[in-house]
Amino acid sequence: MKINIPKNKKLILFDGVCNLCNSSVQYVIKHDKNNVFLFAPLQSNIGQALIKKYDLDTKVIDSVLLYSPENGIVYKSSAALAIAKHLGFPRNLLAVFYIIPAFIRNIVYDFIAKNRYKWYGKKEACMIPTPELKSKFLS
Image (cartoon, rainbow, N blue to C red; front, side, top):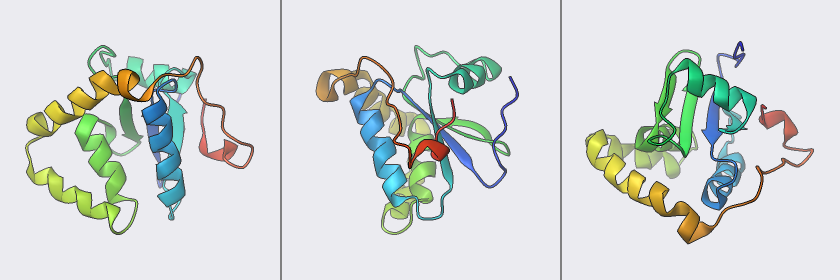
């Protein structure tokens, strides 16, 4: 499967059944004033194609990935910080956490990811975007 993402866009892949992930997507949509991001559930065809292309272990990386044609895949805390960097002030200030080594940031990230279903719940199926947001979602 060829992955066609415009060069000026970034694709956020998220766990489509995770309530925390879905809330995070809604937050990004609300604050994405420059229309940088597109979205797709990890469970979608495009999500599965990128997982296969980059040979990702979904037991280790299973919540948020950021894909761009020029940079490939970024995941875990680095993906969250890269997303925040594009959301304008004051959210872009979170980029200061890049000074913390990724392996340390990822300990916190992994703890939250591991407990996200217990704390926030889980849906039976991936979220279905509203007609107004459909153009932001790939399948």
